[in-house]
Amino acid sequence: MERFKSHNHLGTKGYTVKFRPWMVIHVEFFSSKSEAMKREKYLKTGIGREFIKNLISNL
Image (cartoon, rainbow, N blue to C red; front, side, top):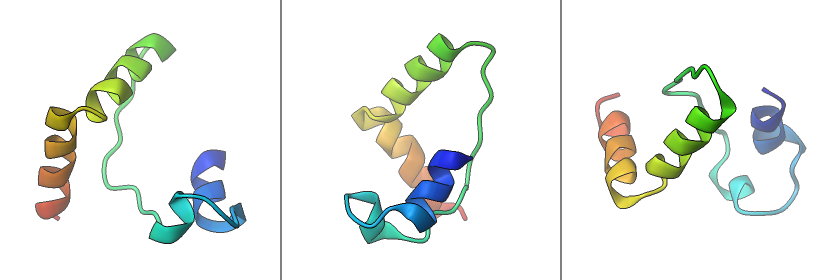
């Protein structure tokens, strides 16, 4: 939650500032940090980005 707050309110420069306000559109829960990191890495691939684009277009 702190990172999300930082993206929307606290940061004054950087990549995320240009795309404010950030909104939560999808949440996933994992039993370990390594599983969460694996999923994040996948979402940053081409296939993962397509998943995100489809998620956004269905809103």
